[in-house]
Image 1 (cartoon, rainbow, N blue to C red):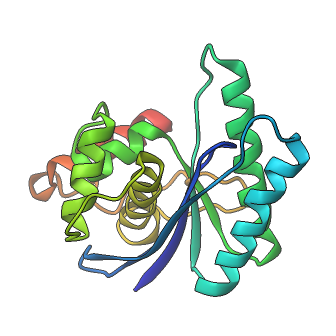
Image 2: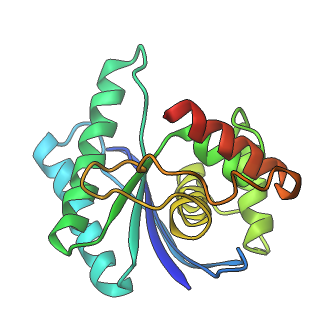
Length: 200
């Protein structure tokens, strides 16, 4: 069993989820929340809100890994900067407790949980609800996204993928564990393998 705490970073809404994933890929939601603060607050206060929440959850749930969704450059530079700052706070909080960290792109997460790297938020939420056998979809979307990041990381780095290089926060250049079994791959695994090859 692998326990992953995952973060969908943001200053206003930062999704944090803790998920337990078994070797057979079954997953169980332990807890999920969304923290943050309004844009009228100082940057120091906004980051401290996330830092305190991360510290509390890391102590409370004792995860094996941290997974953080990373954002590619966009036209909205302030949003990207805020996301990067929130990511850094989460990573630093885990580092203080020697918890290994991985970064996943949104397309990697979508491919892992839905089978399509271009899935929309509704599709991600629907698949997260199905994977976890939840009675109702997790809300808001930031909560569902954090859960999806946790599941994607466990299926990739923790259980089915190439593992982690925590020093560089990337996957090491080793063959995927399912690269030589193309006939047995699920659609999601095929898309994940394609994403791995593009990342090399």
